[in-house]
Image (cartoon, rainbow over all chains, first blue to last red; front, side):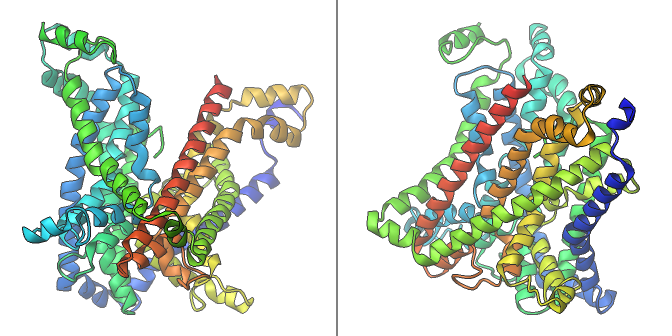
Length: 279
Length: 284
């Protein structure tokens, strides 16, 4: 056997590995994806479209869009600030701060919802004060937005921090020494360097914000037309045995996640340094 | 001048930098982090500490809670093990082989990150139910997947797959063919190259991927509850038990279970960080 061949797997190994991988991915990833569309279209396209056009479904779509429209910009502001402080400066406790930013990823979504119930719920810390002032957070839209912000918290920051660390501080220092203030240096010098990484983080953040289930389910109260996001609406329809309805709304969410994957793939091809750290 | 004055004042904590905006960005970062994450997390610990020792044990380690932990941790371990094997094969195929549809497979591996967990949950439940596409063949063999702990493992396998693949891929890519060629030219066979050269180099990343997949599985809720059956003591996961306690207004019991789970996740986080530090030392 020549040295070149020795780093190549024999054909039978390659065939075996590829068929095992194919079988596994079909069972775990591909069939579930296909089955969503198959179940949604079980009785044709019209019932599926009707389920999506249902007023409660439309209200859920609206709430999901609203939630993402607040959680994603919040995440951008936080992520950019955190990355600027961490990547462009040296200070004590930096690695602790980075670990703390990642913390929400290791907390169960249900616990993420629970913590807000314990603070803002009727029996929580601020419960009676909130009731006296007629402010509803839990079982209302603000709670849903808060829980979503918690679970998406690290997305943009963890994309930008390694990217900005890699780029160093030379360009910003040059800009500042030429008289630029911080904001000018950020928008003219840093932003062009990080825009693709930022977009990548926003993409992942948005997918999670629109798809979050566990945390939102704990704080939502499942009030139809009011506090139901799309994933919660899927759950309600499913538990009522309206499978066509549940899978139709689910199919819409599937299309969204396929779009996310396609955009993510394009970004990774065009900007290979983006997303190198995984997530 | 104000800039240098302020960096002098902060000098014990930070090195001088010409780049402005440190104070405000760090301030925003720490304020938001505290308000959204740290203070709320402290609330759950405080709530649980309202219980005395025996009360905490009764709520956090009741027989029903113990059964739920066993299922959550056991199923997450099983799923992470399945992923460690098939995720590694998938990463190997993506890095080393050329095949039809590779870009699509590559994109699909991230599907569990992009797909809402509830959607994954109902899809897997429909697929593995006794009348589903896959479930009917399992049923014919006398196997039941959905509505049993096996269903939980299936859902957690789906959720955890990308962690193993995406952690192993860069390491496999960096593992240059030179080392293997060198081993081969010294007379090593393919099997001993895999056993002596490739597997040791993959070790830390493999363990990290396994741990990430495991950690994600322990806390997972959305994809599991549809396929699990949710029978107390049998197929009820720990996060679901928190939800049930909340619905019955047992806030302290919910907080106690949450604290047990949080402690477990922090312990795992510590393990993952240690493994990664070890990996960095190995590669350095």
